[in-house]
Length: 82
Image (cartoon, rainbow, N blue to C red; front, side, top):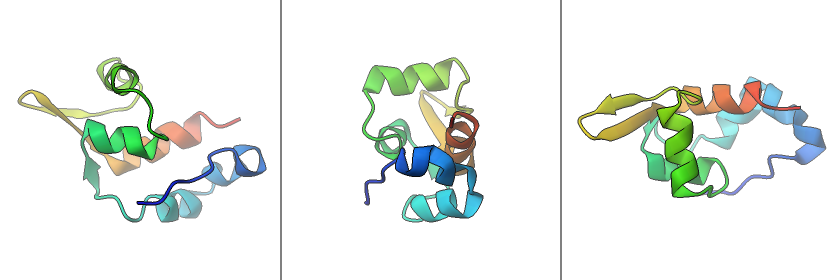
């Protein structure tokens, strides 16, 4: 999978939905916490779980596992750009 520069042009590209869709084209429509970490630039495990547990990134809990729709990750990124 590809790494992306989230700060390119001050983050303005993240506001463009086509850009974010292209950015995550190689990811499935629903990801687990491990893939979420990768999508967010290899953030820490605890940080990823905290984002999901607090509802900052909307997820679905299936048994003991979290499943995160890709569109929720994109919404989190576009909402939190400067």
